[in-house]
Image 1 (cartoon, one colour):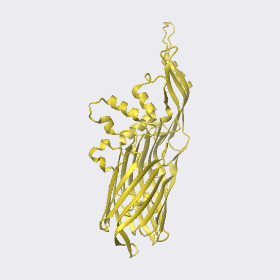
Image 2 (cartoon, rainbow, N blue to C red):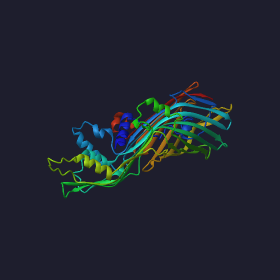
Image 3 (cartoon, rainbow, N blue to C red):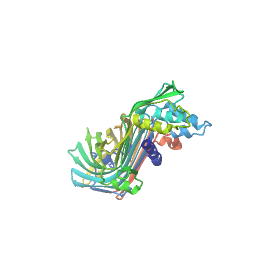
Image 4 (cartoon, one colour):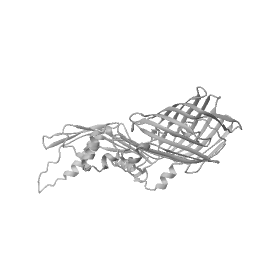
Length: 458
C-alpha cells in the first residue's frame, strides 16, 4: 500500500497532462508529425527544433468524474459528493496523463527520396484505474457492507518517466507511396506499476466477536524501478538523479515506429502508423513487493492476568506476518510500452496552388481538406479508442489551420484547433483541445495542448 499511495502522490504532484495528438497528426508538414507518423511526407531540406521549445505537449484525462463533481459550490457536503462519485465508478474508469518535452529535434534530407530525423525527448506517461472497492473501503469502512467482498484485482496502475533517443528514416518510394521507420532507445528514470492482482476482503458477523474479517487468496504485487536505492533501501530524493537517468541510464529498452502515406489519387490520401512497439528492461534500483496468503481476523479477545501480561498487538502482528507474508526482491523485470495506432483518410479540395520544394521544383496542393482519423493506445486493462473528424485550411503557403471533432472515452464533443505559421525560416505551431470546455475546465474530462518552434530550411 505504501507504493500505491506513493503513486497517488505522484499524480497529485504532477496534476497535469494522454497522448492522442489528433490535431498535430499529419498537420501541415510540421517536423513534429514525423514523431506521429515516420512515413509522413516532408517538403524541406533541413529542420532544427529550438532546444526545449520545439515540442511541448501535455494532456490530462479522467473518466467517471470531473473536478466539478467534487468541488462545485452547490451546498452539498464533500462527503456526499465523494459518495456520489464512488457510486458511479466502474472498473474501467481511470485517470491518465501524458507530458512530453523535446530536448533536441532535427532532420536533414539525404537525397531527393530520403529524409533523416533524430532527437531526444523526455516523457511522463501514467494511468491509474480507479479501484472502486479500495476507495469505498477507505472512505466508508466495511461494517456497512457485511458479506460483500472487496476485490484487490482493481489495483491497477502504471507510471513511466523516461528519456527517448530516436533516429528515423522517411523514404519516398514513388509518387504515391512514402514509408518510414524510427528506432528508439528508451532510458527509464522511474517506473511504478501493479497489475494481475487478486484476492478479496470480506466481513461477516462473527462467532467469537462482533465481526470476522476474511482475507482470501491475496496475491498483490508492487513493482518499482528507479524509486528506491538498492544499496540503502531508501527512496531516491535527488531530482537531478532522475533527469540524469533519462539519458542512457541503467534501465534501457528499445522500440520501433512504422508509418506510411499513400495517395489513392491526387486528392484522396491514406496514412497510418504504429508507435512505440517496444519494451524496457529494469535491472537497477529495482524492488518488487509481493503480498500473498490468507488471513482470518476476529478481533482481539482481551483477558486480564496480573501475573502474565499478553502482548496482544505483537502476537497479532506476528500472526499477520506468518499467514500473509510480504516478500521483497530485486529481480529484473520487463515493462512494455503503450503501443499506439493511427489511421487516417483525407480528401483535399478547393483552390489548387503550388509551393516551392526542396528540389527546386513546385508541388501542387489544395487549400482545403477534410478527413477522419482513428486512434488507439494499448493500456493494461483494454485499448483506449478515439475517432476524429477534421478540417484543414491553408490560408497561404505559410499559414495553415486545422479543426478537429473527437469522440473518445472522455467526451462526445471534444473540439480542437491548431495553427502553423512560418515567418522566414522560423515556424511556430500551437494546438489546443476541448475548446468547448474552456469556460469551465473543472467540468472537462480531458484537456491537452501542444506547441513549439522550429527553424525550417526549404
